[in-house]
Length: 140
Ligand code: ATP
Image (cartoon, rainbow, N blue to C red; front, side, top):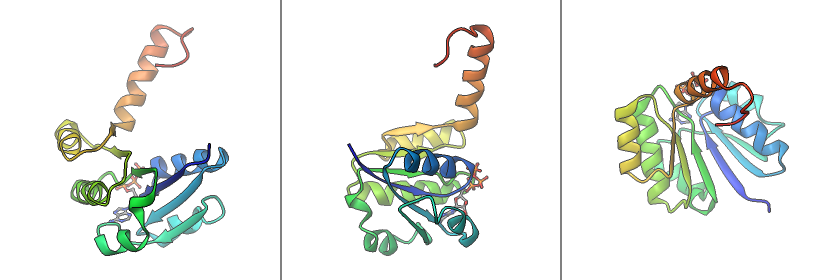
């Protein structure tokens, strides 16, 4: 079934999510404050928009609350990541995945209602280590 996703932040993590979702024929709105990054995804996403996602009015005007899933893929700017996660939660998004930079950040994100909190580098490091120890098992 086709679902709609908004990906906020188009670094390597957010871009990779957009590309896979688009390949799987899902509706994807891609958002970044950086025009070059948005342009890179213009032919991939259903829609690609330059916007500061910390601006609540912008997210309201994009009707972000109507999306099935929102992925907050802003990383290094922890304050922006937390604020955007909080806004999309308050706008009623039913499923939010957000990227944490460290354990303290992850605790805050869980507390404000993120449904999935991921640590891409840490999680991938753990997967690689498990794979090295048990090469016959493909997924963790
Ligand atoms: P990655 O680790 O995924 O490669 P990165 O190293 O490029 O990411 P991050 O700081 O994690 O850097 O930012 C990810 C993306 O989020 C960047 O493309 C950045 O322009 C975007 N971004 C940062 N703040 C905002 C914002 N307020 N609104 C929209 N996009 C933002």
